[in-house]
Length: 139
Image (tube, rainbow, N blue to C red; front, top):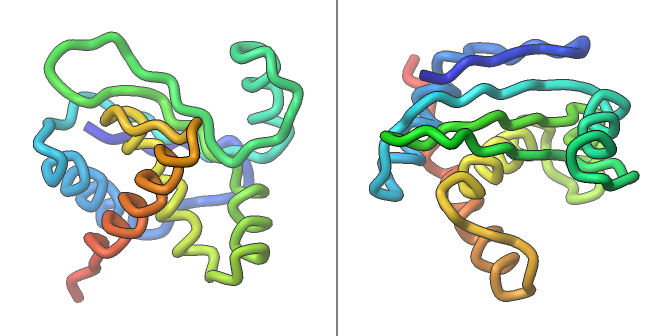
């Protein structure tokens, strides 16, 4: 089950397509979906989470907290829409592409992928790009 929550002036359009896509990411990695909560927020909201739970005083685009559930990929994925907008400008991609990258990034963390070392970061970026290609909308 995937739920989307909005703590800022943003709403995900056609969220059923996103939920389906996230499910396909998990299946493509040989795992099963448990319970995911995506929380979309602004910079200040996520900075508060970063300070309170991780003792970091920096802005970030995403923070992922795994649930200790058995039987599927589960967790809370907090995403700063402010950072996604800034990253889209910096990387010269449209907002939707950057949003998908960050959403996939959170799930990939829950699937066991890291990004602390250069080697891990390269693999993570490759996986993000691979998973973005799984997104499609049937009209």
